[in-house]
Image 1 (cartoon, rainbow, N blue to C red):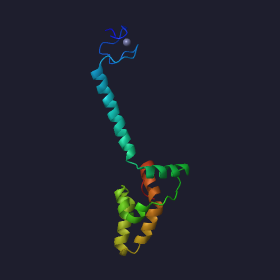
Image 2 (spheres, rainbow, N blue to C red; image 1 turned 180 degrees about the horizontal axis):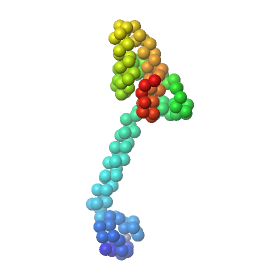
Image 3 (spheres, rainbow, N blue to C red; image 1 turned 90 degrees about the horizontal axis):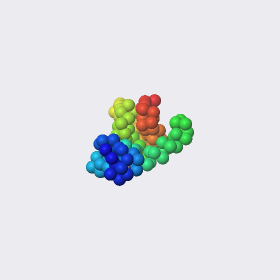
Length: 134
Ligand SMILES: [Zn+2]
């Protein structure tokens, strides 16, 4: 068929003219466009899943070649074992709960401090390196 804008030959079902770049089939063009932006939006949401706080912190750790970096994390400090479970780090969260149950809350302050100091790095290991135990 011929492009209605420039009269050059284009494929039968062409969505866009490859000669002048005009959109020939607006309906199809919009459909494809929406599909592309749906994928883009999903990818964006995935990104948003990691808040700015962690993005900044992870960049710091990256600059340190992925080595242990102290980034004090108040949420982790306050919620320690719960925070670990909430962030999907079941291993350490479970260990903390097990020890607290075993020793009746005695080691809890140690976990607060541990989580506060190492929590962000542990989360980095999980999200970036895909591992969660020591
Ligand atoms: Zn054309």
